[in-house]
Image 1 (cartoon, rainbow, N blue to C red):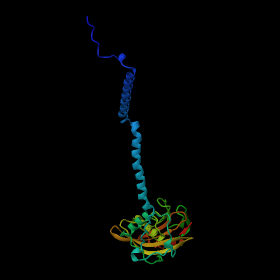
Image 2 (tube, one colour):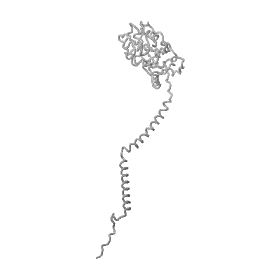
Image 3 (spheres, one colour):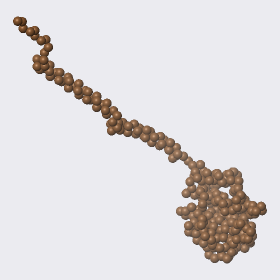
Image 4 (cartoon, rainbow, N blue to C red):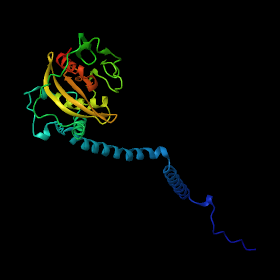
Length: 302
């Protein structure tokens, strides 16, 4: 009986050992490559891994924005403010620095605010431009009321007459000090004398600041009131400089045209805003108009 034919296939045990080792090494290499590819695919959407890239990308616009802001701010830092328009500019007059009290600057003034406020006042039809030349306050009719000492308004930094009998002290708010004449039967307004720190933006000169302050006083007169100037002059308030404005206030009450005599003194005060002393007396109390002269000649800086 013939022997069975030999099988052509070989088992793992029949392979040389070097072949077995080589096969195992190749398989291990494939496994390592597969694990690496899996890790890359898994980590691509991992926020912790993506964060540094996102942070770097976000940081770039911040640097650009900062440099752009610096470039935009540079011209503003070097800009020169346009000087405020003077009420006399329309007449061609200009102030000579150091020549008069109207050249005294107001250090606390904000150029932008000052220019806007003054420009608005110059366009206000209720308030004409100031006279080109200085004009002294005339002597008003009547006799001055009796006064006893002075009111020292330390909040504003000025002293003014303390009238007795005819005038009465009143609650100062919203001012720093206030005196009133008695009410007149049938009249809506009465004389008022007040002091306070200037309630409007300071200008580059006391004269311009006084101009704005006079416009502000229209708030304490009947609606629709207008101004005509009677005085505009530099003054000495003790050892400090100031500017005085006299004016007539025109208005209509109950269909009748009426007027008030008014004046204000703007006083330069050390390390404070300028002080305003303002007095207005209606024609129904014109016997007291001379009190305006008394007030304006007595104002002093503390």
